[in-house]
Length: 296
Image 1: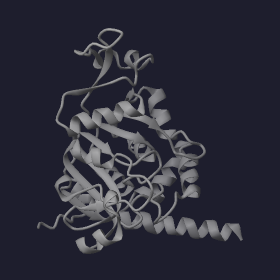
Image 2 (image 1 turned 30 degrees about the vertical axis):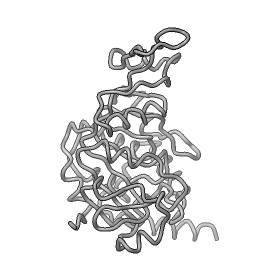
Image 3 (image 1 turned 90 degrees about the vertical axis):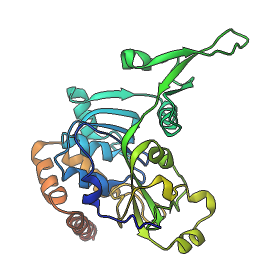
Image 4 (image 1 turned 120 degrees about the vertical axis):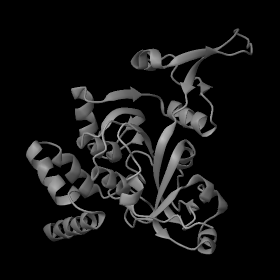
């Protein structure tokens, strides 16, 4: 069986300007941040991003790499909750925003995963979502009568992805992977909706160890859903990736506060985002040590 392991930079080298990418995880939880940081090191622009958004989207917005975003929400999950860079780019009109109900986003991924042009859903009816999307979002009448006649439903279009990025706790070199926390989110749907599928894991183990380490329900990703595998310890930082580590709340606040001015953001980029992934992790350790020293 093929060994699919590669590097972060080699994986993101496949991404071209104008592509549609999906980013797994949920808000500030188990985000494939190492892949996001690798994307920041490229010249790619004009991306369409599909995400249950958090700082993944914020960092890409800060770097000017996003043209359009389809999202069920954008949250940091803790104060200040709303990502500052997404908020800034949206209010500036620098990105095209396609906000929707969380269930609509899942429905769009499910349609793409099943290679369908759309799937019907009630979510979004009775809201301003249709007005917000304009002519891009259609409705369809059920061909089957109910007690009230033929029901009108949202025809959620398939969210077809050129590439998807997800992060898991454990995986093998073949692309089988599992989460060991409490929630799978919709990472499997992101992968199944994409032409190219990129997986990062905290630790690469043998297939035998993977099977012994989790119950079958936790192994939501199989080798047929993955094209590349990257071992990326602390690869979801600064989002949570339990049980391996919790969200780095102090660093997340540092990120949000740094977005407050061009000067502080330039310093943040210089310190944390101007080098390799190893440089980032070293800088984060230095930040943590400084915080501990300050707390004495």
